[in-house]
Length: 326
Image 1 (cartoon, rainbow, N blue to C red):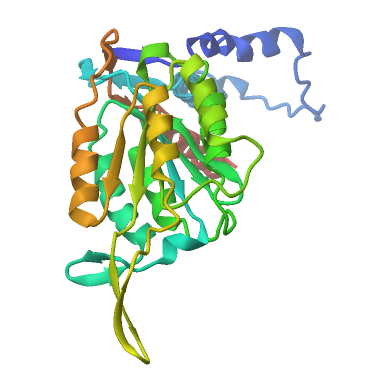
Image 2: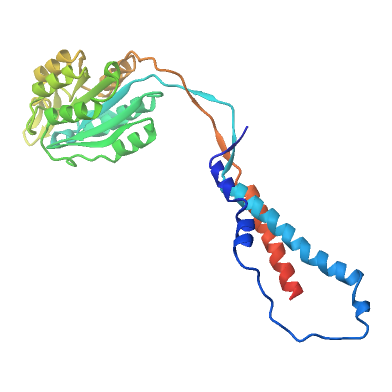
C-alpha cells in the first residue's frame, strides 16, 4: 500500500496562489506606443497563438510544483508485514581484559592462542546465534566499561568484541565493578529476562565494589549471573632446565565465582580449553526465553525520487523554453 511519511506538507500546495494574491502585480515598463494604420492585420490567429504560447509554461510550472510537493511528503510503498523473532532475553556479556588474559594456554586449529582470542572466537559464534535477543557488552580490567548497550544489532556487538585488546581497561581485574555496571544497565528491563554472562581468568584485584556485594545487588534486582572461569589447569613450559608443568590458572578464584552464580540463581562453568568453552556457550543457548507480544516489520521502499525527477525535468523544459523565447 502507498504511505506518505509527511502528509502535512500537502498544506503548502496552494502557496503559489497565495503569493500571487498577496503580492502586487508586476507592472511592465512603459514603452512608447506604435501606431499603425493596419492594426487589424495583427489581430486574430497570431494573438491567439501568443496567448497559447504564454499559457503552456504556466501549466507545466503548476504540474512541476504539484510533483515537488508530493515528493516532499516522502511517498513510500509498504510491503506485507513480516513477523520478527523476539525471544525477550536481555543478555549482557562481561569480558575480562586484564593482563593475565594474554596467557597462551588455548588452542585453535592446533595453534596456541591467548585466552582473549579463544573467547572472541567462541563468544562471537554465541552472539551470532542470539537471534531475537538483545545483547550488550561490558569490558573490564582495572575498571569496567559499557562497550555496547543492549541492542538487536549483533553484528556491531561482535565487531566491538573483536576490536577489544588485552590491557585496554587496565591490567587488574574489577569483577565487582563489572557486575555493578551490569546491574545498573539492566535494572529497568523486564525482571525475568535479565542475564549476565561473566568470563574471567583471575580474582578480584581492583574496583570499588566487592564481587559478593555486587552479587547481592544483582540478586535483589533479579539479575541471573552465569560465571565462566577460563584457563588451563596445567601447561608445559620450556626453560633452561628442561620442560616443567605449571598451573596457569593458579590465580583463578573459583570459590567466589561459584558463590556469585549460586546467589543469583545462575551457574558456574569451568573452561580449560576451547572445546569446553564452546560447550559452555552451547549450554547457555538453552536459557529459557521469555515470551513477548509478537512484533512485525513492514519493509519500505522509497518512491519520492520519481515525482522529484519529473518535477526537475519539467523545470528544465520551462527554462529551455524561456531561453528560446528570449
